[in-house]
Amino acid sequence: MAERAQLEITIGPDGVVRVKTHGLKGQACLAETRDLETALGRVRSREKTREFYVQEEKGRTGVRNR
Image 1 (cartoon, one colour):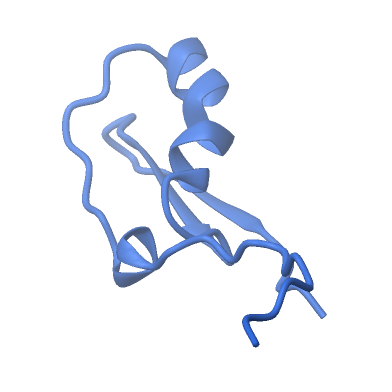
Image 2 (cartoon, rainbow, N blue to C red):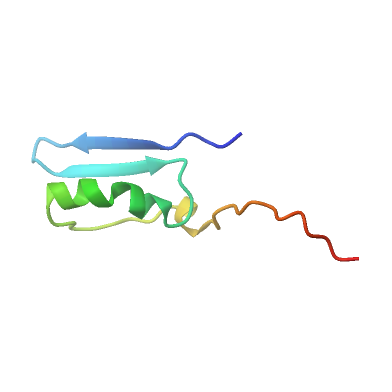
């Protein structure tokens, strides 16, 4: 079963918004947060987690070598 994707959004007292993703691998996190980042304004910094560097799972084709 696929892991559920979640966004954790924190707004600090200084108005700084932090968005953290959970359950997204590879560049899927960037695609999921793109519209939110555009609506909020300029991105000051970005930290990539271990999940960012994990290959996205591809479906199996069922082709076997003999």
